[in-house]
Amino acid sequence: MRTAIKTREKITFSEWNPAKYINDKETVIAYIEAALEENDPDFLLSVIGDIARSKGMAQIARELNLDRKGLYKSLALDGNPSFKTVFKLMDILGLRLKMELKSA
Image 1 (spheres, helix red, strand yellow):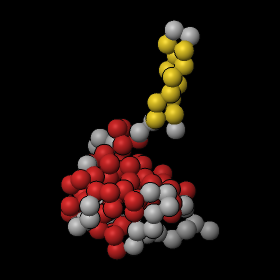
Image 2 (spheres, helix red, strand yellow):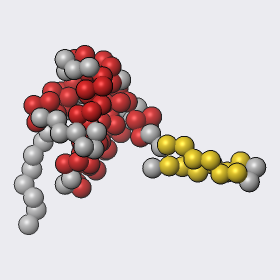
Image 3 (tube, rainbow, N blue to C red):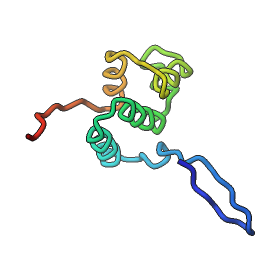
Image 4 (cartoon, one colour):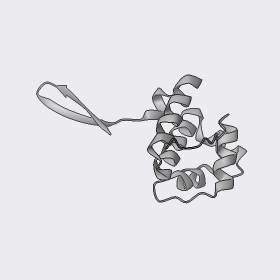
């Protein structure tokens, strides 16, 4: 998403980076819960990537035994990380998946 900034009759755009706004556990939880409600695996992976970027991709990549570029590639829209990698990443981020039955 881009945000517009108007200065002296000129409009400039900058990329909006959600990772800049993920700075506490409550925000992480709300962001993950909102993503899970969408029931979209690509969106959930994108949200996990945003959270990972907010914590520092280089350190997380080391903990996953990946290089930083590999981690970015696996979390890209066309990436396809294994379920095992996603679970390891969630563990490093202090997250766990919780299942519940759908309401009728």
